[in-house]
Image (cartoon, rainbow, N blue to C red; front, side, top):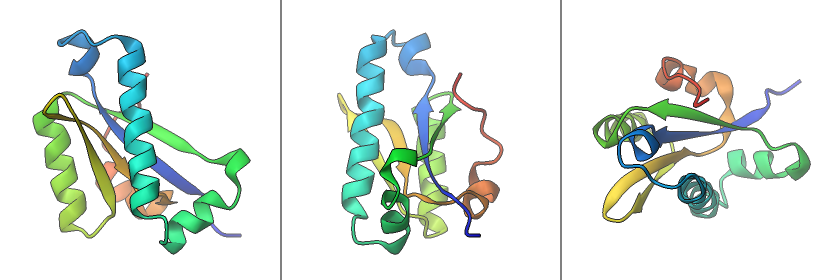
Length: 117
């Protein structure tokens, strides 16, 4: 059996805690990042595998403290050749959506981040 594909979303905690963005605005940024990532990699076989069973898509949102940390993770993903999209709003990076792929491929890069609860 093949491993299920997962889309990881890295979201800044300071959007709510420090900058006091409305919850709806934060949710919208996540949606923008996910949509942009899927569109960017729409012809990728990993994305095709993920989209095959749309009723059972799996996304996981992980927490990063701030923009600096978010961009550090984006750079590491880029350095490792892992497809992703950094979503910007109001002139700052707010969310990173990682191209859907098997969870185990991403564990070494994202396994230390907490779930956003």
